[in-house]
Image (cartoon, rainbow, N blue to C red):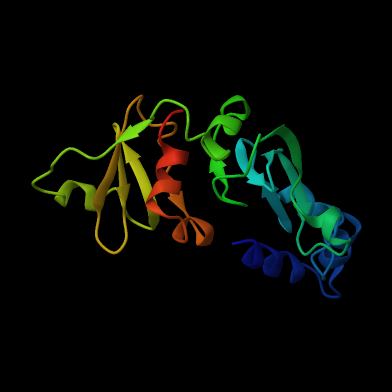
Length: 191
């Protein structure tokens, strides 16, 4: 749509005076002008509300925008993360990004203490898993009600959370695909 509009504007005068006006307004032919930023083009939105654990350090994502393509150093181009806490031990899984409030990130992303009260139990017997297939579109694990479901290779309930799900958001992506059932249960069951 934008290309069509620019094409019409550029043919508006004999020598491309519309292009000169667009250039003065900040729209450059290489896509880096200030008008692209105003229009929201050439930027990446960094999300807010994600949490991850790296080497025992809990980090929370911060809302921001970064230019695309970014020509700065790697740190200047990356989405910002802030330290939100520390684990007493290790992470359940390094670099797993989960949509969680910062105050709950430590309890869910740090490896559980085996001496504490159990937060999950074996799943109740289920006769049909057909309804679970719809919840497992591109995810590795989901928590529905209190049931933690492993989506691959076929949906199956792996545990029942004692205090419900920590989040209704599924675990997906490259790192989530490598999680064991126990790791997924530790992240998805409220602790």
